[in-house]
Image (cartoon, rainbow, N blue to C red; front, side, top):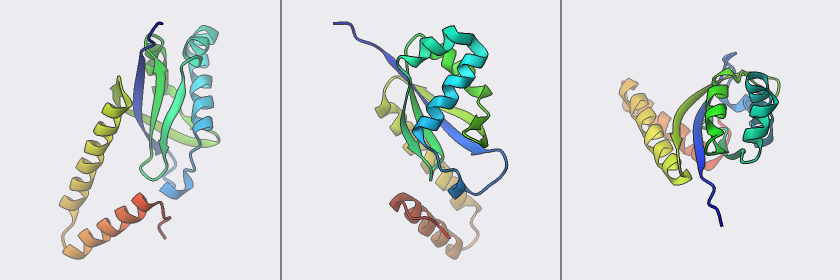
Length: 150
């Protein structure tokens, strides 16, 4: 039995048009299709065929605008060189920012936890009053529970 190694790309999906976070409405299949299309544009049919076998969107979170993309080791280089050119998911204009590449999903989730904690600390530093801090905590609790903010 042969073991297939994978690489996991943790990416942040930012809207180019400055719309609200709630309007992102990410679907894993849309991300998958967009990645295949851009890889085919950059690397041709060979590139698309190379990454297609192991490509999968393992995690997609609309609230935090992050996704984890799995690709087989080897063709992951083709995917990594194609991701900066991804500008559309569905009909939405986006910017994709790669924030971490790991060998396991566990490491990616550990990185995401640390990354979100750093962003939260930055938001707390910008707060001048305790009311602003409480409002940020309230918004974060709504996001973690899956509610839409108003």
